[in-house]
Length: 163
Image (tube, rainbow, N blue to C red):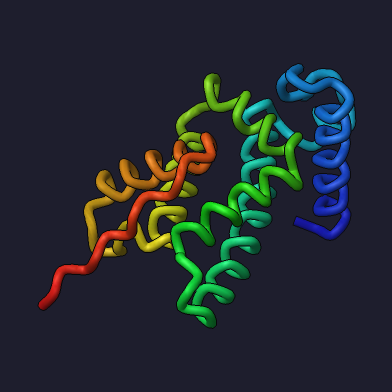
């Protein structure tokens, strides 16, 4: 991808987010914006670009939260990850809403990205460990993300089995 392509994609995404701000609940404005249809092949391609943007934002927030929690033992990693997700959602409501609205019609690649996010949340919070079966990490991550979304208190961290 050239720098020109990068900037065109970035600008198209900003147009999509501006449209979502002006017309909340209208879904992905793919067909409504010619600049978007010139860049993205279809709604799924646009949704994947939005998911990538969200992942960058979320990973940055989680990295900062983990750094802070690593320096202060009074900070719970589960709560730090929860707050990172909620803060990212609060600061980027249109992006989060577009992704949530697209989930119902999403294809397998987008769904795989959603599962990857849930696994990352579970692992970052210490609710799961890298060596566990992927299905188990997916289950834990989905439950944790559901709790984060509802604002429910974070689950207690599991203690590692002693050797």
